[in-house]
Length: 433
Length: 143
Image 1 (tube, each protein chain N blue to C red):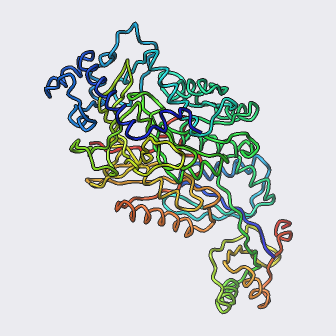
Image 2 (cartoon, chains in turn purple, green; image 1 turned 45 degrees about the vertical axis):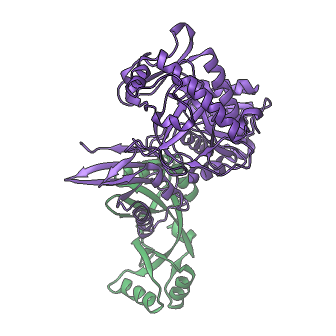
Image 3 (cartoon, chains in turn orange, red; image 1 turned 90 degrees about the horizontal axis):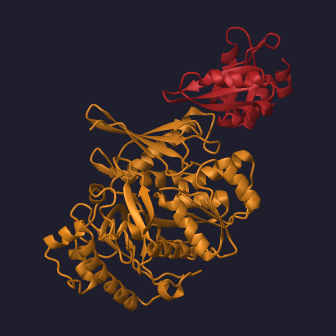
């Protein structure tokens, strides 16, 4: 179901003309209103009107997470505070959070984008949206909330946590659409089993899951356990929050970037050079319409590639492949790049193994040691030691085959790996570097 | 002829075995035989108990991974060469023993050993064919 027929199915030519006009306006605007961009653009000798084609974007400076931190809290805002109606902040795992602002029009744009996202999963005004994204400084909760209200659906503002109560409400209120992180969706499914609640007896039909990277295997697992369609949605607070891109239920293959509001680029994370179309690299976004917190070429540190083929759903908006990792959660183990999502993909390909895992990296002498903890559930359990050892060896061999890195698999008791109520913690790095 | 054995996955951490036995004690389940196989990281505890369902439910509700296996309880003459003779019968019948352990109680002049085979039916056939007594579940729990 397409929320905004006019824009979401715009012919490419018209879309690119719109992008060019908006990019030109944006660049001139930030040059004049954000001192950081004024300096950066001055350094490259930019003059108003210098953007003549979309390719000129490649000459503009990048914005990094550090730039946002250096301008903490409001230094990157392009409007005076009297025009700001909302402030969000991203969880800073190290140091200070990143602060973003919205004008009234930005909030409207965001609501529109989340209405599009929810519509990608078939949400209509008849639906009951169970919103288990965290409310607060995190953009997930309010982002999904406003989108659902824009559609006219009934929103249950659950926020995260208290899983038993979530399930009770899902059951009693007849929630039809679930919004949360994918790891939390699995947690909900598991608690349902423990509580003897049959997911097929619920009214849930679709889940919109984002805010952390996940895999196709995890999608199959969530769909099987909750008996729903599970869609990947993408966003980050520095760009707008959720609502940057979304999968459609028709293809479930790649996320449509809402290109009338954002331009996506893929660059080589090491050199910063744009990569040929279709190649895998770091995603970079430019916000075309944001007023309070516009960004030029923001480096997301997320790894993806763009998909050139048209989609069955009818949207002309280009698709990006689901995020396969982050340049900063990439582990370097004995010189090899390892993403937690790659290990997850290996585990999900082994019949019966649960997608609950944790990676522990340590250093013995000068050597990096990777331990993969995997929970033993009833479907993989056997009373024979050799059977369990065979399972552990199989995981070790499959990881070695895919990543060329040897690891040690440790089988652990069920539910000993901490369950997620938001973003899952997959890696514990004990190396003292 | 078959006897049900419960197996429990345990991480090699202090207190895990104590916890299993405490859980079983609380629901009034009596352990009749027990064996623990372990590696450096984990172990598998195998027990024969007097109430299988109660034991399984209690352990599962405490989050343990619990499995169920069928094993044989074999009467072994309690004298030198008693076990050797039975293993000889199995060998000539080409039956592979996965593992075995001793039952706590005796049955008359016999010791009782628990055997786990891959080919359970064939094992029963070979053993009973050679005149070896295989105990029924009820006989075992009644000891």
